[in-house]
Image 1 (spheres, rainbow, N blue to C red):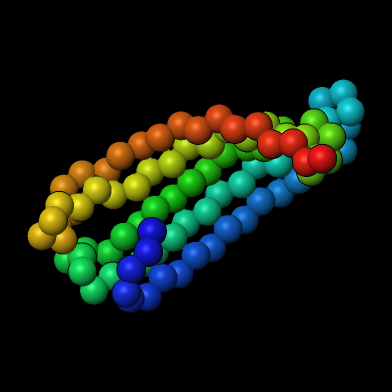
Image 2 (cartoon, one colour):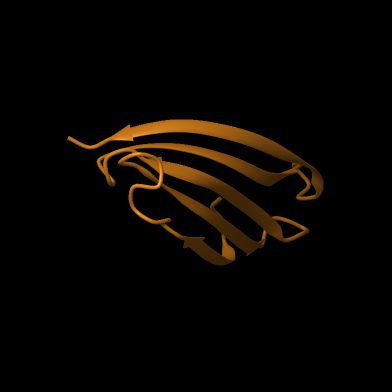
Length: 93
């Protein structure tokens, strides 16, 4: 999220031992963004957590994550939160 104001962001992850699943391993992670934007009447808290399956180090990986973020109306009031589950695959050549 972008806007005029103050934003704090923290992220943490931990790579589990090598060869946990055959020749692959897992890396769980979580992140949180807290923002106070001038246009909004309440603070923004956006969080994300998931696990990355490292198939070939950082060269080939699959990530599944869960996100939760607020939704605001045009007046700047928080009206609800939305959730999302994402699945992504990344390959580096």
